[in-house]
Length: 77
Image (cartoon, rainbow, N blue to C red; front, side, top):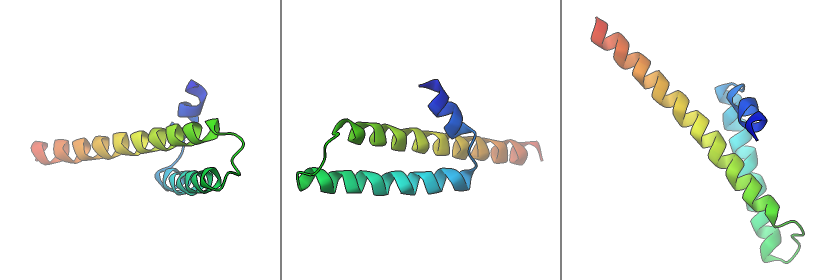
């Protein structure tokens, strides 16, 4: 499982945003398939939701780190 988060951490911000959009589209499609009775693997929905959470967490971590770096620069001046 840690290899998945390591892979996500290695992505650039743009790649993270692209992967997030792709995962959200996939989740939408899975929900649609579930509603129409075409979804065979319901466990995939949970996997995609967790992937989305991982992506959002990494993006937020980077946002916080960037804000702290800017705050550190402002306080030193």
